[in-house]
Length: 613
Image (cartoon, rainbow, N blue to C red; front, side, top):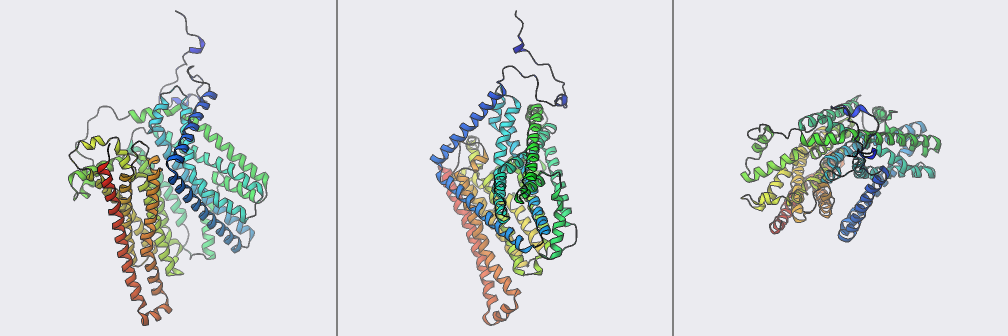
């Protein structure tokens, strides 16, 4: 029998154990000989990506032109609005701060704070997206079965995660940077360097998120309790650090010299020389100041760190990605003694929804378990609502009410609107796709002795009940920190309840009316025509509900705080009419909320009854 040649040689075994990947810091030196050369393998993956992208573009132009027009139109409108606000803001700073040194310090703090916040958000966003694409995607299961290198599969998903997580950064950052270049009269190469700076900056938080995702799954495989505890501790630590810095120092009146110096001092931590956000802001500011050599130096620093982070993530993925994937899907799946009955969380939820029929309670419990077992959902929920709560806690530090009572009312209604918009994003992302995801597995529910209407009502109660508690708590926290009147607090709570009911009804109803039973990815379902329409309708609904109560409340509080208006109101009974208007606006918001809840649900129920699976 002939001996195997050198091309079929078996690589030497690597050390075993949890730390076996440390035996070499370079990519695998001995690869099986049935792999393609790295250049051909990279070309094959790029052909796959290009073909998928071209197919998606053709399908969009042929089948979803309305969705494309809505997305492009809303994106351009948002970009134009951000550009106008940024241009007006930088012009205000330039006219209001005459001292050049103070002006430069202020702009540096603004840039540093903005990019530092985006840095943190990109780290979490890329880590969450990579968790779903690397460990939960059916496409990844297929790719791991191919004779392809592990790092190539990781790089394929890593590039996809960068594209999905960075579009928001480009949408928010580009109008501000272009507006500053116009106000500062920057040279032509400032605009030329914007693309390389932003592209290299995106790679740094993406690499950090990838390293955190791989390490967390590798060292804590299959343990949701450990992952949840670690994530909560890290999040609470970040919140504590930011909150301590924000609350340090005495409280000052808004827009005074003392307040301005205090805010600059609090935000100096964003000027750390080791932060990638400082490299980005310093490089762009140097380019705007016509100092091209320093700008190119910072660009070289950004590119070198981006490439280093990318290679470090690839080296780590080559060693631990497959063991992490195997550990996540195998640990804890062996034979073990099942716990009798539901868990403590399930029993608490069943007690809260006890008035519902039994079949509806069980379906609601099933949806709650799916949400609880998916880290992608509750991590996003925790991060965004936690950051919003941190902002509400620090509202009182600015002393709005010392100037104008109407300002307090405006800020409170803006906070209510932000909570509603955030909730509409979550209902579009998680509630709208629920019916579509049930489609291919509906035969299981079809065998149960229940009506189809019960499925939709259970999802509605799950969405509305899960949204009311955190949203009302955040709005109440905002109102307490602003110390607004009790009448306005009650109005805000009622408005928040109607927002949650309406948003849940719109998402569930449109999800049943416009399902996508061929797609298994919730993000792609939410990005489709139905998800885009749901987001647009939800946004219009939020604006209508808030304006119905905000305008009369603003006029009523203004009349109470203005002495001149109080003199005339005694003769004309103006305050009484404004109070009646406030009551009429509240009643109208309740009616609109009920209509927005019932009508989409009825449309969805009728379509769901006729739907064939």
